[in-house]
Length: 142
Image (tube, rainbow, N blue to C red):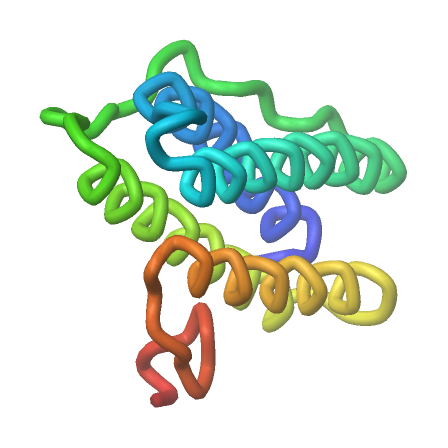
């Protein structure tokens, strides 16, 4: 896999994450569960910024950024904050794996960007009820 392929795969994952975070936020009450709502709002903002950065990074390499999908698989039964938090945690874990792959396939500025994204994803996982991991995004190393 080339660095461009890794960037495109990460961009594709960000498109999906944005879709899902919008769904999670719409199923969460700001007044009933402000901590979860804030974590989801922060996650949405971070993923939107990453998507925009990745588009620029791909364009800088002379390629056309991959477009968002027409539809995404959505988790069924998103009722209650515990279920929403579990699904958001799963989304963030999947993103962390994508960032870890990006780090493995790139160098220089792109690798630093991926490492920062991976670190931020690990922190957001904790806010969503996740447990600390030795190697976030790479459970096979733990």
